Length: 76
Image 1 (cartoon, rainbow, N blue to C red):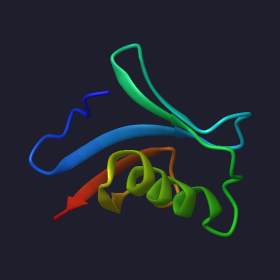
Image 2: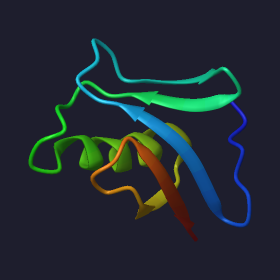
Image 3: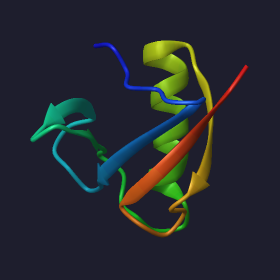
């Protein structure tokens, strides 16, 4: 999948507590389904690990730490 990175930022919607961990393009929006629950930062940590493992990208959550709508900063 080609990630829509603009100016080093990536916008996506997170769906925690899913049956799978998977990144999909739905309705012109990037959605990341995570198995983790949104408690004690578990889903955010899984998100960071997912991008490292799948795309070899180091990311930081710039906006949306407690929201499903997130903006990630790609760290070089």
